[in-house]
Image 1 (cartoon, rainbow, N blue to C red):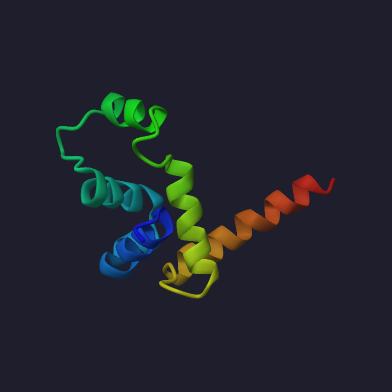
Image 2: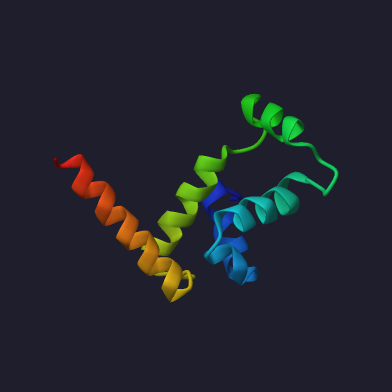
Length: 96
């Protein structure tokens, strides 16, 4: 089954740059599975998301987090450390 999770996992496996960059992941995902090209406008993409034709950017990045939390296709060490630091700051702010 070609779920968003499976599609994102394929991108992470085949394109290592997508492991450390959500923008690169979204770009690769849209090109591979939804035919986006360099001339596709943001307006067209957002319209298709709104009409449920394309998963939202948040769904794509959420799938990346799930795959990486399972220990597959980790980001570069520097990126992982920064994400953990930011997560810690967020948790600290939420508990104040």
